[in-house]
Amino acid sequence: MSKATRMTKQKRVILDILRSTQNHPSADWVYEQAKKIVPDISLGTVYRNLNVLRDSGEIIELNYGSTYSRYDGRNENHYHFYCEKCSKLVDVSIPVYEGLDKMVQDTTGFEVRHHRMEFYGLCNECKEMKAKRA
Ligand code: ZN
Ligand code: MN
Image 1 (cartoon, rainbow, N blue to C red):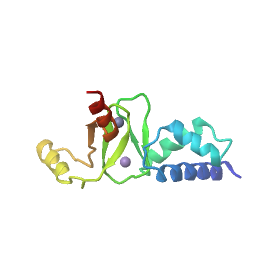
Image 2: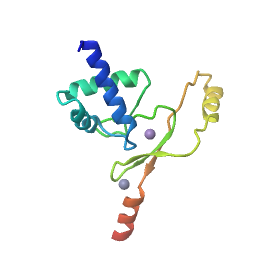
Image 3: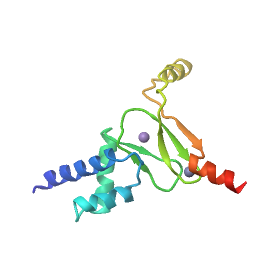
């Protein structure tokens, strides 16, 4: 297998892994899954491919002030909820507010291409645990 073909295969594997989960995993998790399919893949290769996929817009890299990034195989704009207690990251199924871009554009004169929106708080499990302790 040529170097280029190998790269393409590994990229494909990583993209498939990300598209098959809704958990917005870390690079480490992707690496563990990728090893099951490509046993000799390295963590460095996983990172390199994640960056390539991010730069080409096929995946989204998300960071919430934690030390590691989370990756999303769903690349069209959508919103997220981040649990500040357990770091769970889930999609929020509300329509993307397209009017926001125009509002910011009209206010600033800037060319707005897209926006990101994150909601923070406690997920249902963490909310219940908090209620039980109280
Ligand atoms: Zn939680
Ligand atoms: Mn998502």
